[in-house]
Length: 221
Image (cartoon, rainbow, N blue to C red; front, side):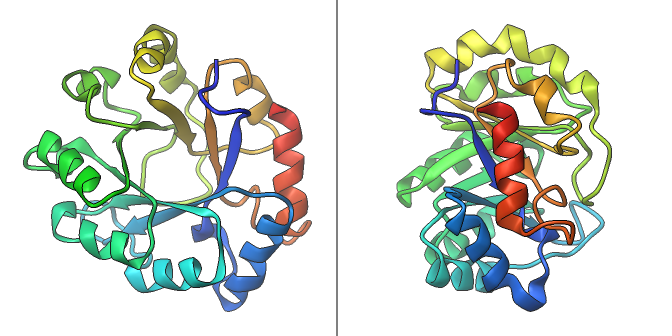
């Protein structure tokens, strides 16, 4: 059962048209969007570059939606405070990038925001076992991080049923990211997932971001 009143769509702004980012985000907000997903990539942990705290700050100044920053970066501890000061409400990190995952989670909490861990498709969810009492959120990647537009990897779903009771017991929100679109999201509706990250399925030229957002939301409502 979802920990939220209702499952959410978290549009990934990486897929937005940055020449009109404010208008794209406003379209989602006007449609009732509650949260934005911010893919931060450093060209080192993943082979791509995206954006840093300045974009987060600009979004914070123009939107009242929650901002969750997914840090696909090496040495995230160096930059966490900068993203929080810029306006991030949630920080998500990969355990393999943290010298001490527990210390990183505690550092995020000490700065007054929520903290979560990210599991890649080739990693086992058991990586989170030592940190269930320290985390607010689990993000399961259903593609390999670093690039948008990849196809959904169904095998990542096999570990979810075993962990749902433990996540619920610890009040941990479950999120999935990668290949989420109108063709895939319906099959995930009853898997206990709280939040669905969607990039190109929201930000494309077929419909407005708000219209796409509502189409996706209708599949899980």
